[in-house]
Length: 71
Image (cartoon, rainbow, N blue to C red; front, side):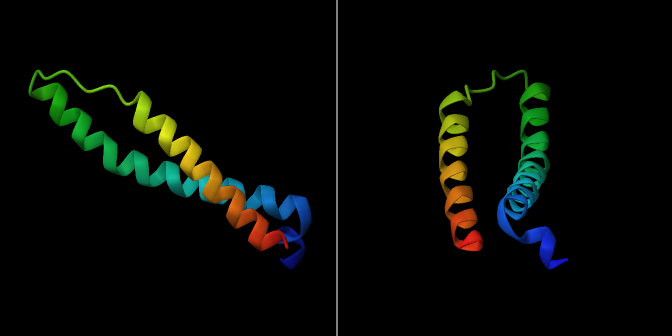
């Protein structure tokens, strides 16, 4: 099991696990809000800015965590 988290393969494994965890949280929290918007005949706001910030922020956090785990 320790070989799974050693070196570059470990970094990729942890990156994948964190990515799946973030996807799960986003999927669980966003579906209900968007469905409520659709039922209320409202226009959803653009998520380009927040999405870009999340990608950059989470990417930096992921790289920091990988650097800490690998070193």
